[in-house]
Image: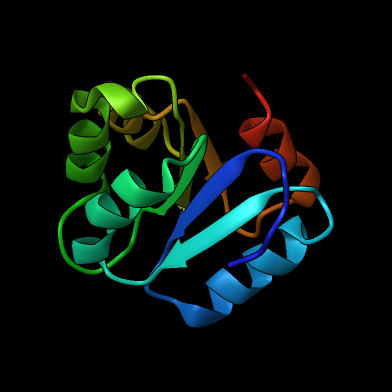
Length: 123
């Protein structure tokens, strides 16, 4: 976990290299960053960490990210959290499906640091 005094960001990906790359992008931005690599850890970790933003890899193994987004949105403590989907798919149907699940932003790989920071700080 990266220590900072700013917003809390939870990264969800089963790809360790993606987690490391994203953490490097966010390093030095005064953010508290926590990462999980299994979908089973998302809700318990989120309840403890209380993220301001959750970055979800759409291709993570296990439960669908749309299920996870809906589960987070159902809990009052996450209603104001920013949900960011990370995908390689840019089509309109994917965008509609993710928005319908409660995602606030959809970013495509490769991630641009400026876009990621803009999404995290959009509220």
